[in-house]
Image (tube, rainbow over all chains, first blue to last red; front, side, top):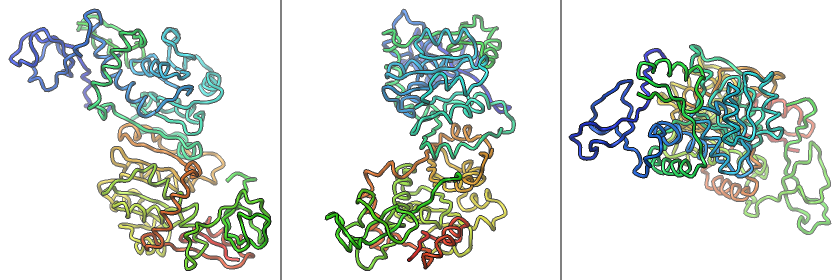
Length: 272
Length: 272
């Protein structure tokens, strides 16, 4: 993040007063209105929860598994990695809001899934939700060896959330014609000067790899499709979720900092 | 190239004796048989020249514009860069056997084409065959500024033959959703230890770029289609060619070294 960047996140809010018939009192909406308890909207930035939303399902999932992180996983993985049955898929930040859904979608598509995360609790979570292999990158002696051990044959798909040194270890282990979907480079966001690493171009060439970056809004015209599919998978129990809930508006900064430090598993949620 | 790699190149040969009815005496074929005046084949590795080949056309074009370099340009550019009318296309090694065809195909598709090459003679050649902008990378003070001047708005497509420092200057000037086709990294082939450069992943992410490497044989099932199209364009005068002909079998090593040193414009040919 650059100085001056604002991180407002998303909220689920309930309409408590309305002069807009499209949003009657009592309706729940997702919006990006900042760290605030109340806000006024002309309706333009409000996205009502899907009408199929059952009373039993936490509405906070509209910020996670059935919200932007879910859509990021759904489109960013399926459209860019183009996974096929039997493919070996690598995901890092695998216990996060996006990574945990990527891994589960990969399993639904018949892939073998390898995940990396930063605590033993997260590794247990990954195994609970069906990852074939998972390792704690903070505990392995060599990232390269951990990746080799998890899949000696290499990787067909790589859903990239980390960049930097992780990428250096992973890209050489891609199989020919592998697909790399660049969703994030969290290890590099704090670098004032972009760091250097080995040139990736020779690997891209000789292995005939495809690497593509994306920002999820490029598929905004298909968000409804994605949200319906994710909601269905959640209701059928095919996609499991874990939320990291911080209670109390006053604890929001702590929750946010904890998320950046990797303390959360699944989507970081503030409950007010 | 690694020590021990063998560079045999391709040849056009005439059948002078035959026990294979598929290849009667007098037929011309392309093959990869090494640096030799005669060879014996069971027919498996022989590719006859297209039957449409007119007597007036140099048969050596089957090694260049209507051969592997042409097919490399045709498929590697069209399939991976996916050019659209009005796109700005960047090609380096633009006066080479592949680059000069990429630029001309880009013009046929309604693109603006910028080329880089290493001598003033080559730059003149690029202008003669229709490049909109061309610069001698050995003479510009700053590669970055030369690229900015040639297209202040940036680039939609980048056909990469060089890698390394050229890539460092070019990739940051890609437009959002740009496509990079990695055909070669000639600046890096001699490096025993892969060199380091700025990580490309953040640019790939934030600009939503796609970068893909290829080896032309992946389209071998479509070579006939590509060859027919290239031959047609050459006969219609829409794709122009220049060959760098070295005469005499004994001058072959000199011709080969000259090609590596960048002395040739267009395909390097040995005439025996």
